[in-house]
Length: 131
Image (cartoon, rainbow, N blue to C red; front, side, top):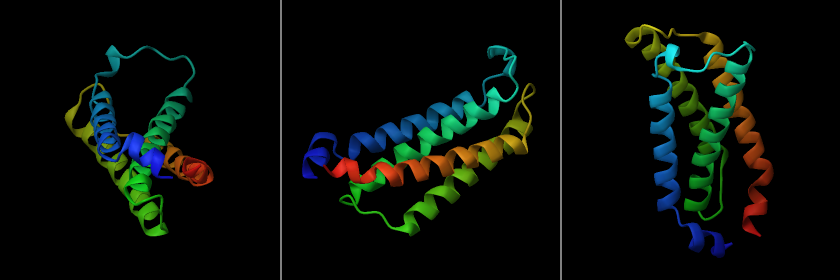
């Protein structure tokens, strides 16, 4: 258990989680004409889910290691609500600040689903991080 914490530490994980959050924030504001055209319309929602799956797992890994491999449901709920609020804010800002993008409630739903899947995934693998 201490080997992972000594190897990774929590500061690099915090920086990675912050960098990823900033990176996807920028990506969500790239004009849509600059993005590759997609023939499969559901692919956009799958991409949103995957982005939030990674986002939640990075933050959960950071919190898990920072708290000495302990997790309580309060942190999980706070993280889930934070991801949901972040997704809602991004969608609202896309609608207000960009010309080529619009707010989409289905993007928020895909983000939330990706976050939920990420939390369930992390809860199932977290004990493997201790060994």
